[in-house]
Image (tube, rainbow, N blue to C red; front, side, top):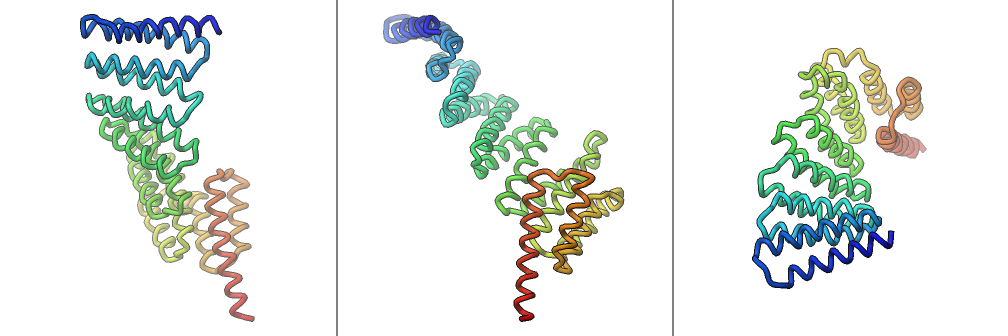
Length: 290
């Protein structure tokens, strides 16, 4: 390991010297770039990720001096992936450089990919607002390149996090839009009931029984097969429990569905919010009676 670090440092020193010395403008940066690349590889072999990241940034700057923008963006991406192991902040900063250059040179599918990667990093950090912003940007870029599946994956993330942040209407609109799009696709239409269930749970979180009932009618018009599903039955039972302010009925409906199809953490969290809302109403009514 120390062997590789020593090699890397030697290559880096030589590259720095090249840049600070005399030489033809283009060849000076090209020669230094070759040495920086060798230095970065040595640092990577030594698992010295910060040093590798730092040298990739120098390599990117050499490429920019030579107006080799695609290579510069790739070097920034390499820097980001080295920093990924030590510093999320540095990783994101370098992915930003990469995606901005790819946007500038019209490589939009590459820009979308790195945009999504930044979103995933913010998601890991539980910074949902920033994750939403980057998934949104990635979704637009994927849509522009007609990569619909990736665009929809990003949109689902936006809906998921929006609901977690109690932005229920935004989440509802996204899930309903994806459900509509999926109906016309033979590969995706089997996922429609799942999207409508998610939209319905977000409707329940708003606590407006009339809006939930109207939504269920719309969902059954949108997809006539939805009315015969357990997802539709669950939403109808939960809407009725909410209307009757019956916590027990609500709990039983959730348990029955969960025994057949395991509810994921996101759905469980949102349904718990609805249950707490229901309990609060029940307690309020009890107080009114005493």
